[in-house]
Length: 103
Picture 1 (cartoon, rainbow, N blue to C red):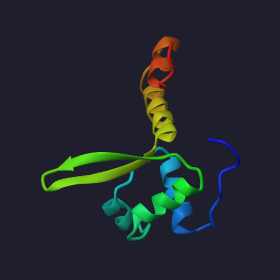
Picture 2 (picture 1 turned 90 degrees about the vertical axis):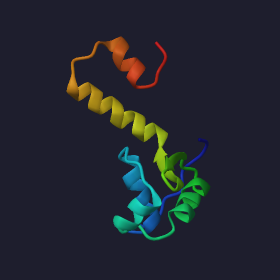
Picture 3 (picture 1 turned 45 degrees about the vertical axis):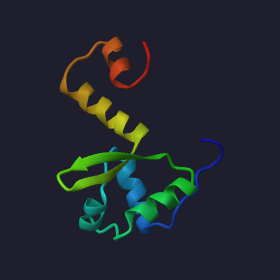
């Protein structure tokens, strides 16, 4: 990503959703509604994209069709790495693979 990322007003739906995703969490429309992030997650994700944030959409099949699950890939990878690192004593090569880096 080139240049400076746009920031959002503190307490806005955009800033809350961005902070949540940057912690390595994933989010669906239903989850966003339950967490008080508003009813239009797709629009907020569009705002985050326009601001230069790399929010990724993943299709999740359900019994009635499919839903979109959003995440920031870098944040999710860091969260997975942190959990794996905390759960066991990995050697350097294993940590590099978990973190998505080539050895």
